[in-house]
Image (cartoon, rainbow, N blue to C red):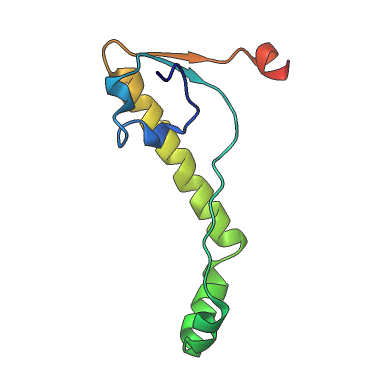
Length: 99
């Protein structure tokens, strides 16, 4: 029997956690790590325009867009759970988080 788990808000509905949980603790534990990788040889075979597009849209630009999307998905997931009857979402007390 699982008595608790740590996951992000976007995982609640795909894994149907709302069907088996009623209490949720919203704690700032940081984002889930994510990676986007490409084989070096595959990148080398791309036309110059493709390489330039990847180089232009990756790095900090890509990270900022992904962080924004992740924040939005977390917010939407949490908001959807909060609206459901029988669900309780509590926030971690800042002092407890520091401890």
